[in-house]
Length: 209
Image 1 (cartoon, rainbow, N blue to C red):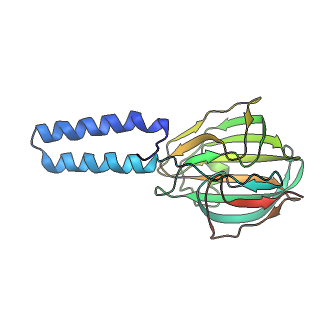
Image 2 (cartoon, one colour; image 1 turned 90 degrees about the vertical axis):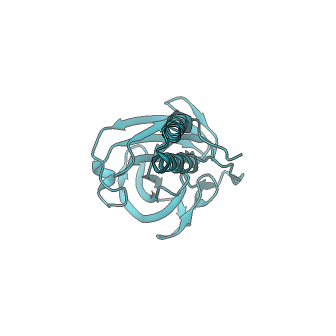
Image 3 (tube, rainbow, N blue to C red; image 1 turned 90 degrees about the horizontal axis):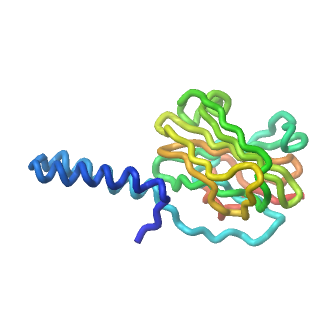
């Protein structure tokens, strides 16, 4: 059976119920439409296990998707100096579970309301709805931004300051398309390139030190 995120079930039973009702009323085409939406929703909320590298000198990807940008950014107060941002775009076909890039303690959690611009736009990070986790561990501090997109309408984050996360551990998701950004100290050697596909909890983003 396909492993699903717990958030899937509130959508699946409603869609399946509508499909059955349509078939009972002999609205066959509409029934098949909702059956297809049920299958797609199950596909979207899939939550596969991942083989997380057991190496505390590494930083792993917080999300599945494609690397849109790797860029130097202004010094960040939480990160503690000059930083590098890795932006990952998640299409509706990617796994949307967010995972911790390092083992550490959540020191910061901030939510910001905003727009619903397409997540692949370069200014979406500054203007869209966003949730941020700041994690301290493995000798560094990192930020993970969960950013909504044009289709995405809800950010789920199940961790708060004081919680401990293991590298690759699930902490939330963004529903129906999104962008996830990872902000690292510039002392971390980034090992991914723009255009590269990554897997959350599995692909190595960088090497510490």
